[in-house]
Image (cartoon, rainbow, N blue to C red; front, side, top):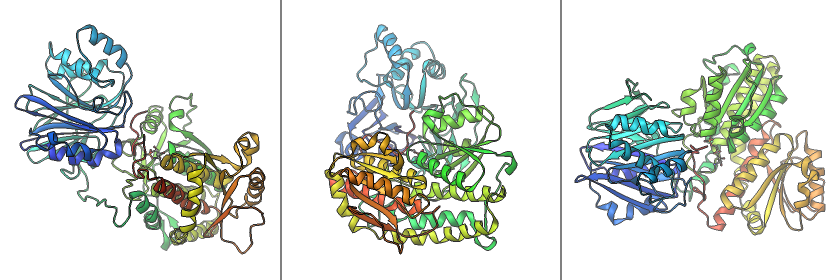
Length: 606
Ligand code: AGP
C-alpha cells in the first residue's frame, strides 16, 4: 500500500510534504519519512510509527529544501522500523516506492556483486542502486527507463537526484500515481486526495509511464522513453472537511452517519415521483446481460456476496461471486453476456483492479461500484455506480458497506424490473420500504448500552463465532471481520447450517456466539442451529428483529432486536449492532480503532 508525495517548488517544501503525508496515512502507518535536496545534498529523516512522530523530529522541523519526497509505509519487505522506512537513498538518488518488486532478491545479488552496499531489508532499495548504477553511463531518462524495464512487480515511484535541483521523477506500473499542477510548483502523489489542498488540476499516470516534474512544467514519457502528451483533469475544488466532530473516532462517526449516507444514496438513485430507479447512461441493453459476476476483497467481497442473495432471489440472472485475489489467477470462462461488477470503497485495491484489467483485456462488460469516483477502478471501468457515502476514514469499513449493498440492491431491483422478474407493484412496494430504511437505521442505532455490556464477554473470550443463514450469512461474515480487524479477537463467520460439519467442535462452555436470526424465511432453521450451539455451552447473543411473537427458545444469553422491515432490507439493520460490537470491544481494549494494527485503508499491493 504506502503513500507517496513529491513537491518541486520555489518555496521550502517540508511542511507541505508532512501535511500531505498526514492525508496519505490511510495507506499505511508503520513508518514515515521525508527527503529534501538542499545545498547540493540529499537530507533524509525517517522514523518508525506515525507521521506525527516524524513531524516532531527536530531534524524535520529545521528541514530546508525546495524539492522533496515523502512516504508513509505499510511494510511488505522488512520490519516496520526506521531503517526500512522510505525514502531510501544512495549518495546520488533518493526513492519512495509503493508496490512490490518481485525480483528484488536477484537484482540485489547482482548489485552487491558490483559493489553496492545495502542498508535495509526492503525490496525498494534495489531501485535506488539500479538508478545509481545506470547514471554512471546514461542520462536521467535512459537510466529511469532501463531501471523500470528490469523491475518485475508493481510500483509507483517518486525519485530525486542530488545533482538535479529542479527535478522529481515519477513512475507507475500497477500502483496508482497522480501529478498535480500548482502556481510555481508541481506535485506528485499517490492520489488526488493528498494533493487536493494544493491543486485540483491533476494528470493520472497510466501503467508503464513515467514523468519528469520541474517547478514550471511536467514532461511525460511512455515505456520506451518517448515523450507523450497527457490530459489535465480539473477535479472539483471543494475540499471535504474531515473532522471527527464530537466523536472519539472516525469509525464511531461513520457508524452514526449511516442513516444520512443511506438517505444520500437513495436520493441519488430513486426517483420517487415516478416510482423508478434512475441509472443514467447504463451502456448495455438489458437483454445483453444474462449473468452477473461480482468481485471484491474483504468487506467489499461481503457486499458482493450479499448482492448474490438478492439477485438470485429477485431476478432470473445467474450470479457468481469472487474474491478478487482468487479471480485474477483462476482460469476464468469469460462470457460476453456477463456483466462484471467490481466493488471497492477506495477504488484502488490492487487485486480488484487486476481483476478489472483482466476482464477489460478479455473484452468484457465492466461496472464499478465505488466510493472514490476519481479512483483507478472508477476511471478504468466502462460504467460507474458511485455509492455516495462521503469519505470514509476509519480503516474498518462501515458506512461504505451499507452504501455498497444499497446500490447493489437498487441495481438488482432495476434489472429485475426491466427483465420483468419483478412486478411493478412489488417493485413500488420495495422502493417504499427502501425510503423508510434510513429512519429504521436511525432507530437501530439507539441499541447501544447492551452492546457495550456484551462486548466485555467477547473481550475475555478466546474466540467467537458469527452465524447466519441466507441473507444473514454475508452479514455474519462481515460481523466477524469487523471484530477481528478491530479487537484482534479470533472470530469466524459461518453459515449456521454448516456448524455440524466441523466448526461445532470449537464450541465450548462460555464461548460467545452471535446468531443472526431475523424473522425471515430462514428464521426457524437458524433458531434450530442456535439450539445446537447453546446445547454445547455457547453463550448466544441473538440478534433478531422486533416482532409481536416472542422467540421460542431457552437459555439465550442476550437478545438484541433491530427494527422490522421487509426481509430484503433486514441485513442493513443487522449490520449496525455488529459494527458497534466491534467498536466497543476495541475501545475497551484501548486499541487504535481508526488504524488497526497491520492494516491500511487502501490496499494497493496484491
Ligand atoms: C474492511 O473493514 C476492511 N478494511 C477491508 O476488508 C476492505 O473492505 C478491503 O480491503 C477492500 O477495500 P476496498 O473496498 O477499498 O476495495
